[in-house]
Image 1 (cartoon, rainbow, N blue to C red):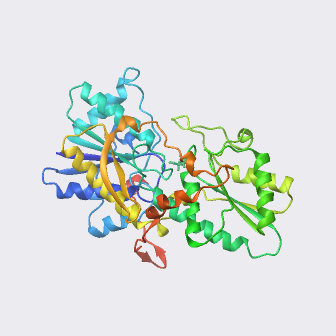
Image 2: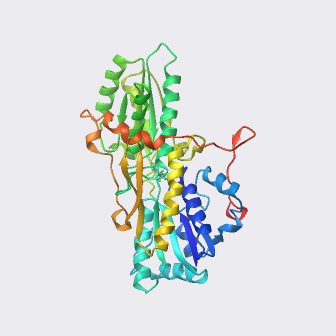
Length: 405
Ligand code: F6P
């Protein structure tokens, strides 16, 4: 029996830990002969670009290094499978690759779009009488997958974002003159990551003084009013804003380009708001876009996140071996304090192409803050530090095989 693993969608600090989880479980399972990796997500299965992972991950040290390495070791894709009726060719190519390499199980680590692939591929395989099992493993820094309590990758991103915002708070408050700092944080339609900056309150910070999410109603006029009010109370105002905050003028500063799922490439709202403050208030103002650092800064990853990512990968392979297909693994929170989760599974069709938004009841009535009720949800996810292996004063990363660079 052989298995194939692939990684898909936006990178995170924990997606390689899930790969390690599946791989380790594969090594422990007697009936599994080879563990293959598909290059660039499902595209590797379509184009028969797959590697024997045992030839790349050779030692326990390799596995440890991979666990602490951000991004996707196998590469990634934003590839949407067409409907089978429209384009059977792609499915036939995937089945050919599976047959050539005697693949019995395919584990797809990805977000809501990747679960679309899990649903379509498992239905296709059933329809042609194939017994190959397809299981999804969640991942995304956006934390926007339905059913699961949270997603691997989110805790590490939230830890980095909160720690960085705290550093920005220190830096921005040194001068005697009034200032505004706008911090742009990822999250297209769901503001979980931006909202998670509220955890700084647990450590006695007052900032971010304003938090704006895609889920809150937002107008530039109200933003300026809110900012002026905060400036009356604080010398250095720090504002966290989601990249996807709803703005009519967004077309003016975004490229308009979209990926295969029709999602816009977002970026620039921080700069836009910086200019707005300069025009309407005229004080010292700066914007900081955390950009890709928030999903690849593994030097401050959350141990809880990395451990859970590995565990859920192991469970995915067990589920496939138990005969399940078309499912996504998920976390169910049993308690906040002490923190406990169980790993369960759900039909991938309940997650595919769906988004779990930040709860409205955790947004302040003024639409510009997150309430304290959200803090116990976030705090357990950012706990613990990984003992990062260092060399020459820098974290050591697992290097992708030469043929993949
Ligand atoms: O995967 C989620 C995410 O990190 C979003 O928060 C962000 O909007 C998007 O990916 C960016 O994707 P890409 O790197 O493909 O531009």
